[in-house]
Length: 337
Image 1 (cartoon, rainbow, N blue to C red):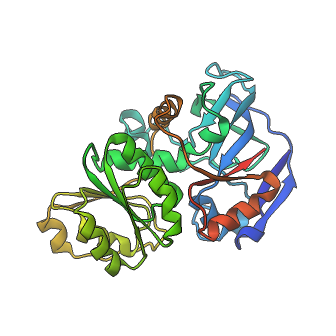
Image 2: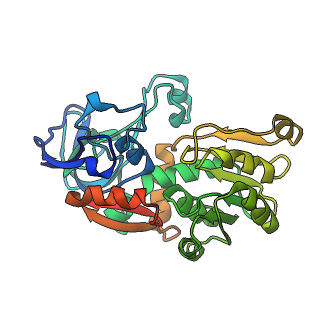
C-alpha cells in the first residue's frame, strides 16, 4: 500500500509517497481502508520539526489522526465491527487504567496520546475506537470531525457556553475556529470571531458567525471586539498574546478555555485581574469518544455540516500541507483515496 510519509521534518517538501506492506490486524484490531483523512495543525507542527512527539530518529513517519473509511479486516476478539462497515476513528489513545480512564473524562488520561497513521491507503487501528457511520454521513464528512470538532465541542462544554452567551473565538477561520463557531451556533450561543483576512471572514459568517473582526494585533482587537460586547466565554486555540487579550475582554466570572499554541507557547497576563475578576483559565485537549458519537449524531440529523476546505489525493498530501501553511484556507483539508 502507499503511504504519505514524513521523510524530512522541514515542511511540506518533506512528504514522500512510499510503499509499505499491507497491514494485518492483531487481536482487538481492525484494518480500515482509508477513504478520507483530515490534516491538522498538529500534523503540520510535526512536519515542520516543531513537536516533541517526533524527531528525525522516527523517520519515515506517517501522521494523520482523523480516519474515516470502510473496515477491511478484523483481528481475533473483535465483535463491534466487521468487514464492510463504514466507520470513523476516535484517535484517542488511553491507558485504560488511570482514574481518568476509569471515571472520566478519558481525554485527561495520565498517559494520553493520539493515533497516527491515517495518511495511507489503509490503517490498522484499535477496533473499539471505531464508530459506525449512518448512511446519511459521508466518510469525507466524518473525517473532518475528530480533531477539530471534538476539540471545539469539549471546549464549549468546559466554558459552560449556552443559549444567549457571547463567545469570543480568536482565529475563527482555522479548523478549530470554524468548528467552534458552528458548534456555538448549535448550542444557541452568539459568536464574535477574528481573522487576519477580511475576505476569509465571509465563510464563517455563512456558517453562523455573528460578528467578524479583521485583525491580528491584540491592542486593536481589544477595542474592536470589546465594542461588540463583553464575552461570557473565550475559546482560545492560539495561545501567546491572545491569552492576555482574552482575560482583558472576558466578563467578570467568565471562562477562557485554551487548547493550542499557534501564536506562541507562553503568555503573560495580569494576575490580580485574574483573581479579582473571578475569571477562569482552563486547559483542554481534544475530547472524548462520547463527544465524537454526539457529533456524528448532529451530522446525521442535519444540525451540523462540517466545513471541508478542499480534498487532495494521497499523492498531493504535500500540497495539502502547503495550503495549510499558507493560512489561506477556511475549514478542514482532507486527503482522500
